[in-house]
Amino acid sequence: MNKQQYPLVSIITPALNRGEHIENCLRSIQGQTYQNIEHVVVDGLSTDNTLSILERYADKYNLRWVSEKDSGMYDAIGKGMRMANGTILAYLNTDDLYFPWSVQVAVDAILAGHPIVFGDGCIVQSKPERLSTELSFSRSFNFEYYKDVATLMQPTVFFDRVVLEKIGHFDPSFRLLADCNYWLRCAQNGFPPSKIPEMMAVQIDHGETLRETYRDQLYLEFARLRGHASGKSHLRWMARVRRLLATRVVMARFSLSYGLNGRLGWQNFIEWASNQQSSFNLAACFRAGLPQFLKTDNTVKSAINTESLLSLCTNTHRR
Image (tube, rainbow, N blue to C red):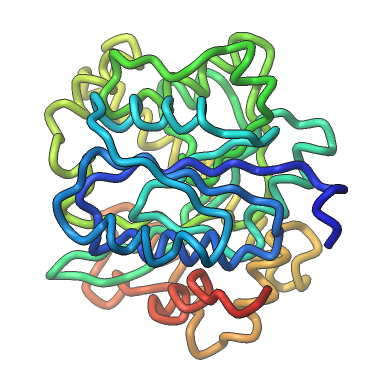
């Protein structure tokens, strides 16, 4: 690949005492098939082994980092965006991963005329009582749906620098949901996100994520984001039903595309999954997505072998 023919993509990672997770994040970016990438890590004065890991990877790919006091995750992301040189931007938290094709697919979509894009992904439940991986599907963008019902899967989002220049940075008054607020602001100002039918990222859910640590704050911010509607039980129930129906439509299309070797989308993921028959269970994808009251012990199981998935995302030898 001639780097001069492809735009520079800047990926920002905020970090604070994430030595247990950050190495896989670095490897998932190092192993991208798209090569014109800079990775900017903004650390908030970690006291664990985060900095030693960053030092070890600094000469392995286009990585640079700073470690200084900040006012939280979105302050760190803002610093990284101001440091970035790329014409395409994204941010990836330390405990999330890209698929090897993620940046290439996003660049192709943005160059085709979509200033902000998002996709589907996998969610790894990494908790003492359960280790499993499920597919997470999102419907195409609709403002009311993503305001009142669901959120974009943040690590799948990429956007053109022109969006940042016209919309500005994240709202620092949000501690946990500034990204959700930002995508809605983009849509209100002429940049509605475009859906890519592809698996674009892996989200790792564990007990130390901010959304787990600050659940009460998360609830308050959702209420603010949705005009306090999320506090009403009947509206929450209606939102769950709408989300269930919307995701089932996408899942049905994915299933059909799987049978057609990716002709309807998700081509990269389906190609990988088709070669991983012992590690991928299409039926389990759908059972995992059942409403909680329909689940039994034998239906709550991993759709994908987690070790195979992590190996795919952290393999740095494909370039």
